[in-house]
Amino acid sequence: MPAPTPRSLVPLTAGAACLILLAGCGSSSDTGGGKGASQGRPAAASVIPVVASTNVYGDLVGRIGGDKVEVTSIISDPDQDPHSYEANTQNQLALSKAKVVIENGGGYDDFIDRMLKSGGSSPEVINAVKVSGKTAPAGGELNEHVWYDFPTAAKLADRIAAALGKVDPDDAAVFTANAKDFARKLEPLERKEARIKADHGGAAVAITEPVPLYMIEASGLRNATPGEFSEAVEEGDDVSPRTLQDTLALFTGNKVGALVYNEQTSGPETEKVEQAAKSAGIPVVPVTETLPKGKDYLGWMSANVDALASALAK
Image (cartoon, rainbow, N blue to C red; front, side, top):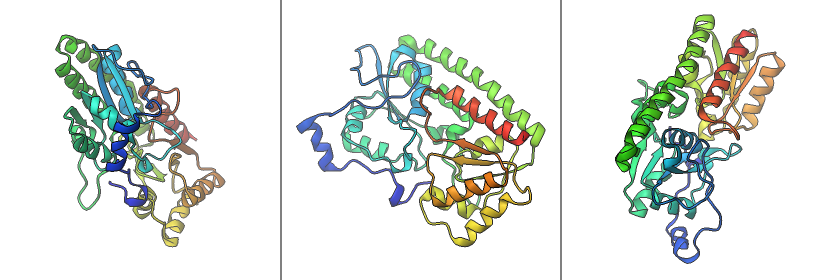
């Protein structure tokens, strides 16, 4: 769901955009992992310039495009809350040169659309939420963290291959083959989720934010956290005392088997919840919204599922 003003992604101002003409870029853009990721190098003429809103999608593009793509990932700091990211002139410049852009959508990174519109460029844009086909449940809100859903990751690989093939028809077959290989490598992760479901299906867990919910649901687990708590944390709002007490009560009497904790957006309320879980001997499974340093998507997600299985086994 879109985050409100205090944590929303801040669009580039008109005045800042003018700085491109006056001063250029002061430093190179951060880039995602995987093959084809750049380190601020100028793209060769035969290489497809691609911009991804986060390094999660940058890694996927690198896997599909290999050395045929030059990937710039806008949000790549594992210590930063993506919701509070402030777009800058470097981002605008990278987007103006991109042939393919991949964004999350669903209100997560609206600054991409705003910057594309203000810049006047028209690259091939891939919206991960639209590709996923996910919609808000009846009476609820959309969980936009679709990269934690492995079927969506496979769909995205196909869509990325198609977009790259449109720009570079000569290598379309290579992109398609890479997408199929990536999808095959997702299958062991889905089997791990199925094993958790077989061993612990129906078990309750707690969360701090909806970030890992697709993985939790695919593993047959039940989220027992009061919706008011995870929603307030995600939106940067204060948690009411009653809601906080209801959440802390989950860690007494073996009501939940684990706490899945978004360590990228911690605060006083989530720290109290984490401490309550640890004090009660409830395993804490840390997750993040962007790729940790030195990780690729497959290794990162494999570690997340393994950590969840290990926590429940305790």
